[in-house]
Each structure stands twice: as structure tokens, then as C-alpha cells.
Amino acid sequence: MIAYLARRFLASALILIGVTMVTFALAFLMPADPVRQIAGRNATPETVESIRHQLGLDRPVPEQYATYLGHLAEGDLGHSYIQKTDVGQLIMSRLPATLLLMLGAIFFELAIGIPLGILAAARRGKADRAIMILAFAGVSTPQFVVGLVLLYLLAYLAGWFPMSGYGSLGHLILPALTLGIGGGGWYARILRSSLVEVLRQDYIRTARAKGLTERAVVIVHALRNALLPVVAMVGLDIGTFMGGAVVVESVYGWPGIGQLAWQAIQRLDIPIIMGVTLVAAIAIVIGNLIADLVTPLIDPRIRLR
Amino acid sequence: MGEAWKRFRRDRLALGAFAAVLLLTTVALAAPWLAPYDPAQQFFDGLTLEGAPLPPSARFWLGTDLLGRDLLSRLIYGARTSLMIGVAANSAAVALGALVGVIAGYLQGPVGFVLMRFTDLMIAFPALLLAIALAAIFAPSLWIVALVIALVNWVQVARIIYTETTGLAARDYIEATRALGAAWPRIVFRHILPHLAPTLLVWGTLGIATTVLLEATLSFLGIGVRPPTPSWGGIIYESQSYFLTAPWLVFFPGAAILLLALSFNLVGDALRDAFDPTGRGRGG
Image (cartoon, rainbow over all chains, first blue to last red; front, side, top):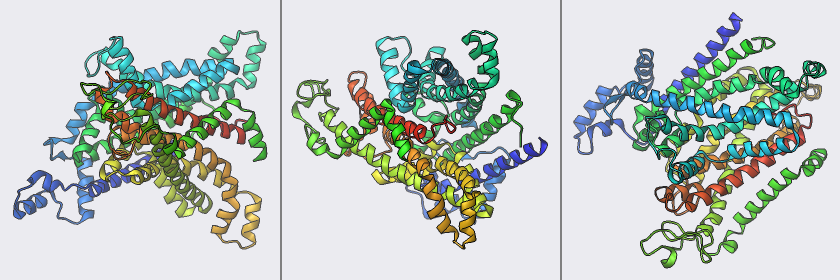
């Protein structure tokens, strides 16, 4: 167990170092020169050189990378030259909106996916088929189409929800539902196949032989063991949503990390792009780790190796 | 293979989806003959007197867009863009993923370790964010968009092929081939890769759905295929500001994307079941 944890943490740490190398390389790929962004168009060559020197961009690349890592170790994600703000602070200011959207999205994913998955596995036959087509349709519709259609029907025609913005529960529902419809499709499919597997096992036959109703067999006995992949999936989703939902945030004007990233990409604001990518990658690595560590708590048969 | 085809043929839903794939492919190929108008032509009578797009009518079956162009013709030509990028990007992703997975899985050792840690690293990146950043960096064209999508999407294939290859590499016939003195590239490409054909076919189909959705998303953000080329995501991007008064400009292209992605997903899923009737590999 301890050895497993140590290995798992070491692997995650290695991945994170690799991630910093890629985000660092991203800065060199960008077709924008941060020095020019600061100095403006009409700067003299001397000014340009002195800013370049101040930023440390005239030093050798390995040294720049070491400085970058040093700053990161101190929790310093850098400074946006365009917004003239600390990147860490910018991301922190977007965090509440992102966390809220994440919670809402996971709520709808589970609220849609779990009942559909149970229904499909318990009924089989025609109902199963119909539900699986529905789940596939959810997965096959781009988020922006779901978002715009919901916006048109529920916000514009029906007037039940505000068109866009942030601040009340009403603002949260449509963006969260948009994310939940796509994710719910995946959850339904995963839960169905896991339930079908569990329902084949001997202890289920015993439960049925005891004369339990099918509902009790599925909900009380089978579901608990079948939920495992769903829990793992929630762990992965936490990681994914932490990076922001660029498309949904853009459709609904939701002020989360995704919007920050998208605006930064459009302006080629390199430090913000690097910071958001790094934070998102860290969240995904941690989400993976949580998913791996939580599974044996739910199902003791799974031993950590 | 023959058995699998028989099972696939019995699946009516899969056949329906397969028919939809064929239909959309035909539409894309025959676009110049099927489209009622030139997709780039701006009709003088394609806008209201106030300059707003027209709803569906007998002259313009699906209505017109902001510039007075025929939406149906643009959708028909848009099928070309979607399918071309979908097939090209996904083939590249599957080829790259298969190559990495099969080499890492067979060679193991330091090469395998480095390759698989690299895929771990790629999985840690938020795929959409990475694709958006890359697409924004490189001036997008049809092929750049396909390349960006391929760069983001090969990882999953690499992982699956890696697992399957490690299983195959332990088999006796591979051991025997090695004993006969075959070099590793020969073993990998002649004796292992052919056994992976079903997996590659399944991912070659399912992956197209993912690719089409990603292309639509990039185009919707305005960093996909460049404007004069009709693209379904791009049509929605152009008409976003008008969509409350002209919702057909979002509904019809949206339905087209859904139809294409859903068909490829259903065909791919049915192929997976057909190759793996016990359902061992199901889920996901």
C-alpha cells in the first residue's frame, strides 16, 4: 500500500515536471514577443533590449526554465504583461465561478446519467436501446449546439432563465445542464455496462432467489458495486472541469477559468495561457490520483498494486 | 472478420447508422450536383428589406444566412469540410497512436517507458484547451485544423494498442517468430499489427465522431476552417449574434453535426460489439 502510494505520487510528480516543460515550450511557440507587447510598437531598440534584459529573456533557455520552475515552486505563476496583473490572482478570482459550474455540471451529469443507466441495465430490450441512443445523442451533440438550443428554448422563448451572466442560481442552471447533458450520456453508458456485468454475478442470483423484488436487487444489491466506474469518472471530471469549460463559458458569458483562458488565447497573453494550462493539468493529474485512490475504499476487492 | 460482419448485419440500428454514414458521404462527394445553388453566392432576394436572413421557404429550403446565401447549399458543402477533416485527422491520430502503442508495447524497456510516459503527459493536458491554443497559434487552414486535432487525439489509441500489444507479444507464436531470427520491425508490422485490425477499425470509426465534434467546436470559436469555406461549426459561429431572430441558422447545422457524429458513434459501437460478442471490452 505504502509502496503503491509512493510510486503513484512519484509518477504524478514526474508528469507534472513534464507538464511544466510543455507549458514553458508553449511560450516559445507563440507568435508573439512579450517584449514587444510591453514596449509597444514605437519603442527604441535600446528600450526593447533593456526590457528583454529585465524579463531575463536574454539568458540561456535552460536558465530561463530553471527560473520559471523556481517561481512556480514559490507559487508564483507569473505576471500578465497585457493585463498587468498577477496570473495566480487572476486564476484565483475566476475559481469560485469555475467551482460552482463544476458542481452544477457534476450534479446534472449524475442526475441524468444514473437513472438512465439503471433503467437501461434493468429493463434491457427496447427501453435499453432507446436510452442508449439517447445517451449517444447527448455525447454526439457539440456543447455549443446544446447550449444555444437551451438558451433559445428555455431562456428566450420560455423566459425561465436569464440569457447570460453570473450571480444567481438561475444563471447556473443552463450552463450546468449543458455540460450535464453531454457528460450524462457517458455516465449512463458506463453505469449500464458496469451494472450489466454485476447483475450476472452469483450473489445477485442469490438475492433474486430469496424472492427480493427486481427493484431491490438492482438498487440495493447491484448498484453499490456497479457505481465504482462512475465514481472514478467523477474524479476525472473534477480534473477536466477545473481547466474551465471554454465553450459553455463563452456561450453563457460565464466568468470562469475557461473564459480567462479563451480571452488570453485571443490576445496571445502568454503568461495567462501558461498559467491556466498548468493549473488545468495539475487538476487533471490530481483528479486521476483521486479516482485511483478512492476505488479501493468503495470496493475492497480491488487491491492497490 | 466474417463472423463479425454477420453479427453487425443483424444489428438493425447499426445498419441504419451505417446507411446514414453512406448518405452523408454521398452528399459530400456529390455536393456540386446536389446543392441547389452556389454556396458562396449572395442572393439579392436572399435577405429581407431590413437585411435580415430569410426563414425556410420554397425558394430557399432551409432559409438563408446573414449574407443572403442559401443555407442548404452551405450545409451540403459543409459536409465535405467535416468529413474531410474528420477522416484525415482521425486517420492520422489512429496511425500515430497505433505506431506509438505497438512499438512501446513490443519493445518495452527504455523506449517503451519513455513513449508511455509521454502519453501519460499528453493525457494530463486539457485536450480542448491545447487544441484551441495550437489552432490560435498557427493560422488555421483545413489541414492545420486536421493536424491539431490529430495531435490531441492520438493518445487514447496509443494506450489501448499498447495494452493489446503487450498481451500479443507474450504469445508463443511471437516467441517462435523471434526464435527464427525475425527483426522487431518485421514482427511488429507483419505479426502483431494485423491482429490489431479490429481495434483499429473500431477506433477509426468512433474517433471520427470525436474529430468532427472538435472541428465543429474550433470553427464555432472562430479558429477553425477559414470563412469562405463552408463549415457547420463556422456557420453557427457567423450567425451567433443573430440566432434569436434566425434560430434556423443554429438548428440546421447543429442537427447536421449531431447526425454525422451520432452515426459514426453508433457504427463504431456496433463494430466493437460485433468483434467482441462476449462484451468483455464493453463500456467507456
